[in-house]
Image 1 (tube, rainbow, N blue to C red):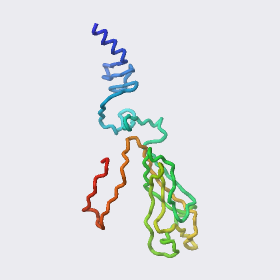
Image 2 (tube, rainbow, N blue to C red; image 1 turned 30 degrees about the horizontal axis):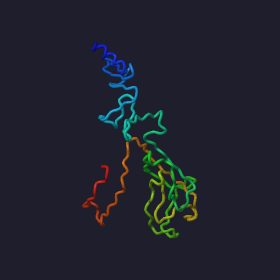
Image 3 (spheres, rainbow, N blue to C red; image 1 turned 90 degrees about the vertical axis):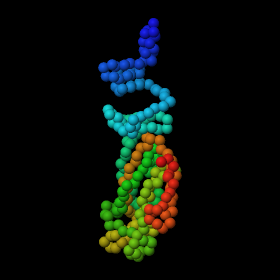
Length: 222
């Protein structure tokens, strides 16, 4: 009687055991992994070994997002985990780029600007900087201000030089009125799969030192 009840329960749960392969399937008679669940699961505790590494079979990445597990499927996702983007902006003025909205969602992607170049729209690379925008060769230039930053939920780009105007070094002499530059921006956009923690900006005053003796509080979340 007890044996019949046990068999009935096993069938009711849809639990299948393949003794030859050592694999257990729930609601599947052909388990492909050690434990193969064809359906939803619920548990109070779950321990994972190396959750960020690719699986042995499919090369997929497993990550946590809030309280759910996600299995990255490149056939279903709208973009890859790592996206390389070349953004070319033409017709740029001598002031450079102060705020260009890439429209990339800041909640789902992390954007890093890793390289850039300035040239004329015809491809000529004879570009100079006029410090102070005064038409005088000051033998100096402002600091490059080229970065990706978040604003209103999307990633924005700035590409300019502080206190300097971009000018064209053409054969007839530097043209300060030239406003037809091309800026190439090379971006990496990382798709967020692991739950992110919003960490406030860290500001530290080094007091004119090289920073070797300074101590700041550890950022929250680390």
